[in-house]
Amino acid sequence: MRFKDKIAVVTGGAQGIGKEIALQFAKEGARVVIFDLNEQILSATVKELEQYSQALGLKVDVTNLDETEKNINKIIDNLGRVDILVNNAGITRDNLLLRLSESDWDKVLTVNLKGAFNCCKAVSRYMVKQRYGKIINISSVIGIMGNAGQVNYAASKAGLIGMTKSLAKELGSRNICVNAVAPGYIKTVMTEALPEKVKEEMFKRIPLARFGEPADVAKGVIFLASCDADYITGQVLVIDGGLV
Ligand code: NDP
Image (cartoon, rainbow, N blue to C red; front, side):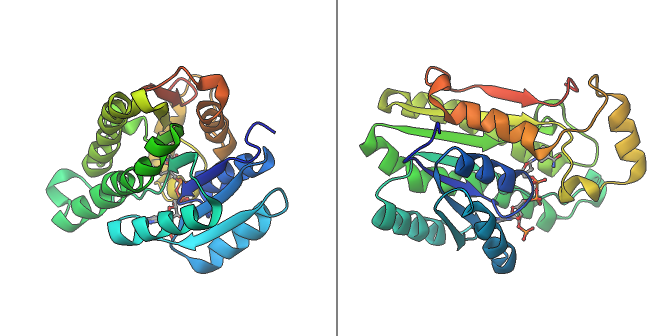
């Protein structure tokens, strides 16, 4: 029970990688709060989490700073603290640059990068007072190596890495560790949508010759959130089967 009495917030935690992260925290004793958009999926996931620990699902659009701050304040009022924040909510709107609309550029940057900024801003004032915190931003190998058809997504995920390294420097003296995880190809709804040809090409380039599971990413996040990683900050943990 590495996270007994710890409070963990996971954004986009109702499904996919975020859900698996939330489940791993719950299994290790943390009280887990998930932020997501779809109330039905949120409540189904909370039921699963409650098999292991106390859990709460909140309908929060992380792109809205006011809404995000209100909900973080609600957690502080009810549970007293936030020990761990995982910025996992993310979207794709893929297209080649010449066909990429301004609105799809904005949407992806707003959810993936500004959403993480909003959550960091909302929790960090409490973490600073607590003199303790772990922030983990879910980036992507695409933010490191780039990908045709994903300039918006790659920019948002590379931006998260820059934000992680800067925040690690700002918050380190308050005993707050800020790290990023960069997954490769992980089997979720997001990647199911990719064309078969893209999947085949990707598969050929993975040395471990398999796509990752959400649990592969969750294990890395759990490590970075644990006391085993207390002297690790400003780093990017790549979980990609060797792709990069
Ligand atoms: P999913 O689409 O399965 O889950 C993402 C969740 O985030 C969804 O429930 C989604 O809600 C929610 N969400 C989207 N926008 C917001 C918002 N504004 N506020 C709150 N929640 C929101 O994605 P994955 O599990 O595949 O990916 C999780 C993270 O991992 C993402 O950041 C992604 O970029 C990253 N990643 C994924 C990889 C993969 O191979 N799957 C590889 C590398 C990185 P809804 O669906 O209702 O809109």
